[in-house]
Image (cartoon, rainbow, N blue to C red; front, side, top):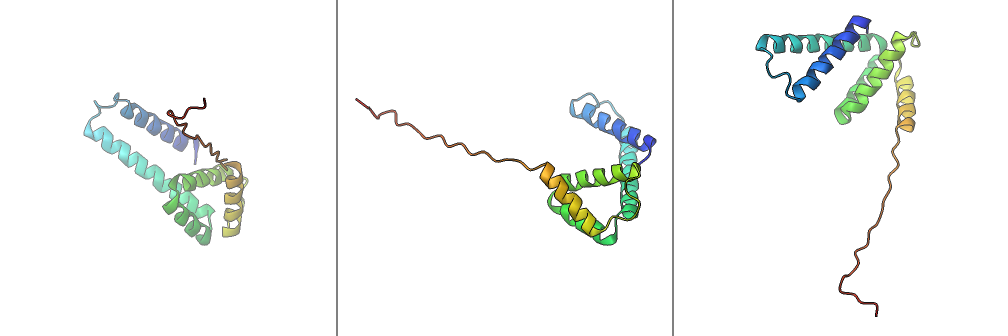
Length: 128
């Protein structure tokens, strides 16, 4: 992803936020169509870049993950694209490397579950 692409994504996100807060209601249908077209083109570029970076097996695994947890798959895609932009990825990412990357992300984002038990106290109970 080049800097103009990143800027387009940021601009699209800003417009989405403005629309959510009711500030973007005045937009004409032409502008909305242009936004949708820009979003579609950005997604196509993203998928094209991922197809160049990932092996076919890794792409299939990422697609299966996206079916179950789309936000996690998007995060993994972002990490892979960022690494490719910085030159850290010199060859296609294999399925094994994708698995190790997923394991690293899982260890970083593990959530601790805390269970607290609140017992009901009987109001009518009298300790006297």
